[in-house]
Image 1 (cartoon, rainbow, N blue to C red):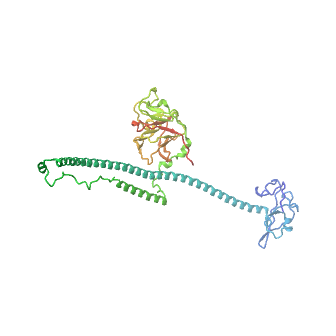
Image 2 (cartoon, rainbow, N blue to C red; image 1 turned 120 degrees about the vertical axis):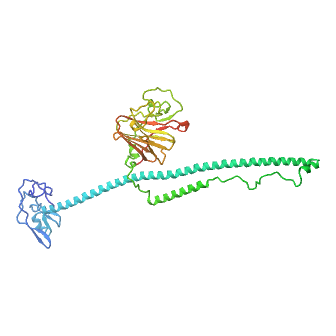
Image 3 (spheres, one colour; image 1 turned 90 degrees about the vertical axis):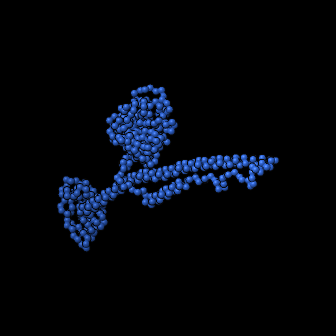
Length: 468
């Protein structure tokens, strides 16, 4: 039997969130609920007298106040319903039913909250797993680049040694052959002279002279026994091949161990590489950088779009304005950096020498320059094709296992950071930490062309975002 809602209310002792909390709070309070009677282990509610029709919702059949809940049929009923339709059923007051329901709702709410917490923890765990995976990818990328670059370097060295040894063996064989040929030619020449003399004597009529000049038996001129002589054909490469084979064998053993157990975990504390922004993160701050021709050294030649610079053979006719460098072969970017985060990439290709970074606006541009952070320069240098260094005081040499072909530069002005990245290998190289008190500008130096050995340009390239 369903409950019939009315506009009256229970006594104030009924909780506001009970099923009948919407009734009028100004109604007269109810008398205490009738007592329970128990039979056969079930609760039985009995009442006497009629309920006030002004304090409770009324039963549509008996027009008495609905104050009982039948647990058996799960219905809200009046006392008359108990005796007529719900005899022997398990009944309680609605207030007791609500207290029990409320307790169950509280437990269910707590269970739901715990389920929510578990799922939030799981989401955080999944996010942490992704972050750890990204770090693992970076570590393994760096380790694998180091591993394979060592093998590639070993192969390149072996190939270079092979070429050198074979060329040396070829030259030695040629020299040996030339010496033997010269000796053979001398012997042939002597033998031909002896042959000519014999031929003349054979044709001579002066038999006495012939007999006196060449007694019998006739002796041959002294010559070398050439039957066992040959040019040395050993190229001398066996040692190099055996050395390379040993290195490849060690490489294969290392690969086998890595395949079974992975790269060994670092034993030291996380390096600055791991705490610095990753390449794909800083790429979000990519900016358009162009060269400022008014600052360029007279030997520098720039492309029409002001994205590329190389060093020429001679000075060009350009104005000697105050902002132009007149001794150091370099140029600044046009865009000033005075706040925020900025990122750009520069292709260095196969150049043997270059400088890249940022410089303070107030730097000295005339004459000799001390390129250190205290003088307003923060940059990475390459010299002689494989010597990388940061111009600190003193300079910091850095060993890069994989030669970068594209350098990423990231500036966080407020934090005073200038970071460098090997874009191809997705590896952080180094970060300067300082304080910027004025504008700074991108800095580029292709260095001198070294008679054509370093004639390649530095090129500001578009930033291609790496996939997540």
